[in-house]
Image (cartoon, rainbow, N blue to C red; front, side, top):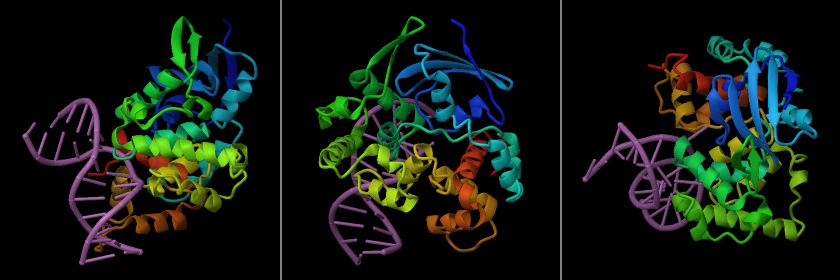
Length: 291
DNA sequence: CTGCAGGCCGGCG
DNA sequence: CGCCGGCCTGCA
């Protein structure tokens, strides 16, 4: 088939898909990945400022891709803005320009980041893929099978033990209770998922923190990667490490998450989440030194 | 064999 | 309140 061609600016497919915000994209090469957005499978190739997009489903394809990769937001302007923050940020952003925050599915983010607690990326991917394979719809694309992330309804009758069979370990009960709470809230008119996008960030945060298995870090990841709330700053052990080296090295007192959060709020402000992803990616790929 | 990985919960001081 | 031990699983 003829690919859909999309012109892009300040966009890097590799940095965007490998910065750790998503768990299911398969890497073919540095310029080519296969993954799932909503109800379709896509193979995307980046050639300079062009994306070639192949999919099993053509209708609204450009709109779906533009929305997922947030291509209608002016990242050139955002990056020009955040490089002024300080030299660490400037260096990081220049190394990984075009890294964008995805607009991913809420349910998938909620469950994936619950699974992420005290876990590592290969195992998180494995669990999310198992859950999709067992409960999601099968899609054939280029003669191979793929599985959509299941809907709430498809998860309705899944038991705690069945989650555990997906290798999620002690997080089984959190997934089970979370799915049940979502279904309960919807059926009792306490929740309309579409409406969550209209909540202000504090309101959304307090709703998310009510789920078992969702603490501050998991909550911030959902706010950032599903709801594009760029002002949040998820702090995991890696971010804690890079922040302490870059900004608190001369400090004598014991560093607390609260201190880092306050620093980000004061200095990174409305683009904290984007800066976090650049710093995290740069550190993990050793593009900046942290000793 | 231990230790530990992109935290969270629950119990305790 | 803040602190701390335990936790599935897989890999070093």
